[in-house]
Length: 203
Image (cartoon, rainbow, N blue to C red; front, side):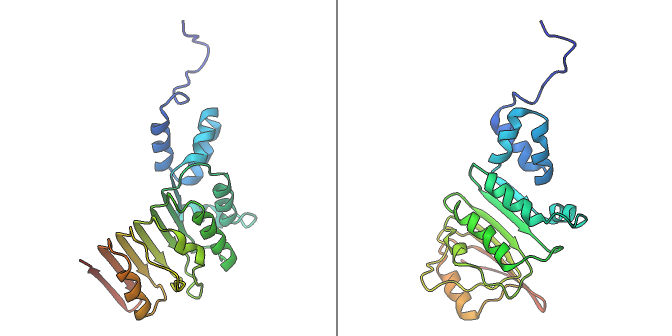
C-alpha cells in the first residue's frame, strides 16, 4: 500500500533513454542542476550525448566575474563519461585564450570516434586550429566561426562530412579547394564573410 505521507518520486525510475532525451533538450547548466532532483539523474548528467555551450550558457557567467564559463566547460568535459555525439561551443562575451581553445579541442579529440556534429564559434581570427582538431574523422556536420583553418600536410580530409559552414574563417582558396575535394560526401557548403554571403551546393 502506498504511503500517502511520502511524496511520489515519478522521475527516478524513468527509462534511461527518456532521461537522456529530457536532459539533452535542457540548457546545459539546468541539466546539471537536475542532479539534486534524483540520485539516479546524477549519473545521467555525465552521460549526455549532446553538449551545448551557447549564448545562454555564456551569458549566465558574464555577470559573475569570479567564474569563467570556460572553467565550467572543462569541468563538464572532464566529468563526462559517455559518448559525445554533438558539441557546440559559442563564446563571444568573455575573452578566451588560445590555450583554452586548444584544451577544448584536445578534450574533443579524445572522443573522436563518436563525435558527429561540431559547432565552434570563437571569434579569434588569428587562432590557428590545433592539429588535434583534424583528428575528428567521424564528423558529418561542421560549423566554424572566427578562426584560422590551416590543416597539417598529413590531413586527408573528413571522409564522412556532409554539411560545412564557415563564417569569417581564415582560409586560402588553395587550401579550401583541396579541403572540399578531400570530403567525398560533402553536399552543403555555407561560406559567410563580412562583405560576402553566399551559399553553394556541391554535387
